[in-house]
Image (cartoon, rainbow over all chains, first blue to last red; front, side):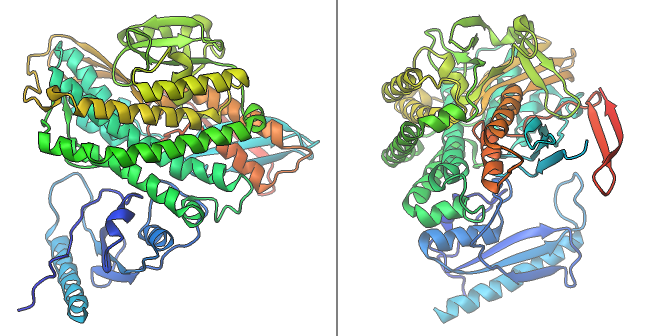
Amino acid sequence: MNTMPEKLRFMVAPQLTLDLVDDLRSADAIFFVDATISPLEKGWRFEKIVAESRMSHFQTHHLSPAFLMGLLETLFNRKPMSMLVSVQGEDFGFDEGVTTLARKRADEAVSQIVEAVLRIHEKE
Amino acid sequence: MEGTRKITIEPVSRIEGHGKITINLDAGGEVEKTRFHVTQIRGFERFCQGRPFEEMPVITQRICGICPVSHQLASAKACDEILGVRIPETAFLLRELIHMGQFIQSHALHFFHLASPDLLLGWDEDPAVRNVIGIAGKFPELATKGILLRKFGQEIIKALGGKKIHPVFAVPGGVSNSLSAEKGSEILSGFQHAYETCQIALDTITQWVEMNVGEAEAFANFRSNYAGLVDEKGCLSLYDGRMRIVDPDRNKLAEFEPSDYLSYIGEHVESWSYLKFPFYKAAGFPDGAYRVGPLGRLNTIDAIATPKANQAFASFKTLIDEKNIRGASLLYHYARMVELLYCLEKAEEILKNEAVYGRDIRRTVVPVHETGVGVIEAPRGTLIHHYEVDRYGALKKVNLIVATGHNNVAMNQAVELVAKEYIRNGDVREGILNRIEGAIRCYDPCLSCSTHAMGQMPLHVQVFSKDGVLIHELCKE
């Protein structure tokens, strides 16, 4: 049975902030996972992140994964594989927990992430 | 009018929140009128009505993702007053410590990543490069150190409140968690690097000011009143103290208990902004307008109680008095770094005090007052939370005067002065527009934090035809 690599690390961040580049600088692969209101064919989507090397506006409340990857490359010359994983949400009203449908989509997305992580781990 | 032009800068970049600047040029291309519009509205003052007051430290910290700790602390202080309690010494120290963490992360973020592109790359640099990535490319060591210093402040917040943003920590009557000696010692190990980085920043900004005195003099340099909290010796006080207002020559106009703020501070409203204009009542509006935040505080205080920062403060004061640039907006960047040094010293001092590791952290009592006012110095200036509750503890009235609001007159004045200084004969290059944005940036405004009232908000709607002619105008006072 495949096991997850020991150096796998989970982080929870309510916002993407500049100081995260220090936490990400030693990573070989990074998966940014977030909910989306956009309708998605499978209910989830993987997109390769293209690092931003130029930008005209910088708002500290709105750092994007592409911006962080650009900063990682500029500061530390690191270009880890990075993916944005979007999971379509159903109900964003005041409540706790997630809907059954959103849970199913999240579970599927997590399975895909696990497979991807194991593939990367096997190559090492 | 024929030949007139209206220039709009939207969004204003490298600030917290969203705003826009409009500049009206006359037929000769000279600046006629400028305005800094705050276009967001948050409405916390209204929708918190009816909530139990105990919830406010958790609710109001959601006002902002950069300074949630400031709101939580001001709110908890207002709630302490409603409870009628003096919080335990350990709780006081812990609140002060998390406050220092907040200042460290916020001031580091602003200096290294929002202000430094203008100062180190230049006002006229390509805007695609004139940002944090540009700084990272040209000054990677400085950018990295700045990021790590900000992280240091965030880690202090996390050690106390469980997470870096929106921590759960200050509660009515005290705090929710104690600090272990082990955790304290872990934080203490990071001070050496933090001091080194702070010193680099102080040296950088001091040299910049010395080499650019002419620019500091010409760039939004104006006389104003100043305000901030001071301790019983007149020293810089960020968590507690009396509120002091001074005139442009630093003569004391008033000093009062923050709970008496309504006797001294009024709020003016204009039709073109959601952000109100606080002023010193005795002088009226607009003469009673004052500046808060780093420059406001350093122009208000007599001294700083920690040794290194007091030395930096003395150098700061000597320089700005000798060069007669006491009111220069660009000095906010310098003052901010003096404060950063103070916050590091203060945080270290607290962590070396055994009392901070105590377990007596909260008083729980039945509320005895129907009013509570909590005032602290947030990174951007004086922050006031004022609550009134009914006999069941439900909020009847909420008044929030947020740091950025106090600086509203000053920011508008700064925009106008810079526009008039640099725009000539209708020549409006990108670098000039950046200077105008830079005038706002000096104040590090947090626009998301500062617009709260609902119901009676003024509204100004202008309808233009497709060729730019104003065809309809609606104005609600």
